[in-house]
Length: 79
Length: 212
Figure 1 (cartoon, chains in turn purple, green):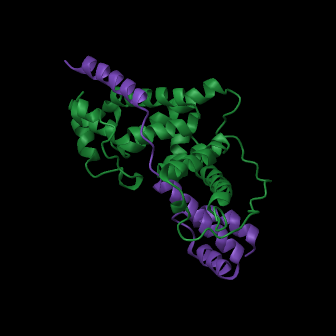
Figure 2 (cartoon, chains in turn brown, orange):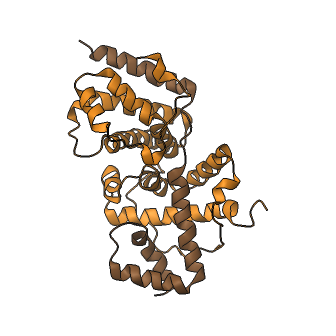
């Protein structure tokens, strides 16, 4: 496996359901190639950092508007 | 609606904890007319739906409107929710549609999600450096949030939205494809490019030498 084809196969490697033979091939390449290993590690870290990032609070005025609109909607829906 | 729900200091769930086991119970109660159950759902997901809308529209006003319309539509159409997917996934799909409408209205020539991705682009990363064990801990939460938000904002919209749904909102590849009307291979291709581009953008902040 060459570096270029490994990069193309990363879409499957990061997700479930990769063909086991392809996974083995990728892992064999990673064991030998420091550059690809760093790309894979930093890519995994990128996903992890975004996945764990906290959403900022909704701005107070936007939140107040949202709840006002909802309250109006819920009141309309009540019998 | 109770004022307690408006408390901005109320602890918010972490993304990985956001879909809780009580969601189906809350949805059933809301469908049966329990207003407080719907309030709980809104309270639980408002930050995530706002971030989603903000990342898609890249405009604060549009993001606020998209978030509001998404929750109102969700309430209006709650009776049509069959429970075949998670409520949160269903809500995300509504919010994506609202946000995309805003984006297309403001930038009609920019967004076509189903455009072919340029496969001639060289995907081999140019900068390959080690980041060390916990690079994000070198930054405060606000600064880190700004770095991530800027990196996402720089992405092409069709990459940005796929990345947002798949890696931030944690939808499956199939759910992402369904929400955006894309094929699974198209989602995978955009996702890979988004991840590699973001990795490159974060590299200058997170490589070992940064900040040293």
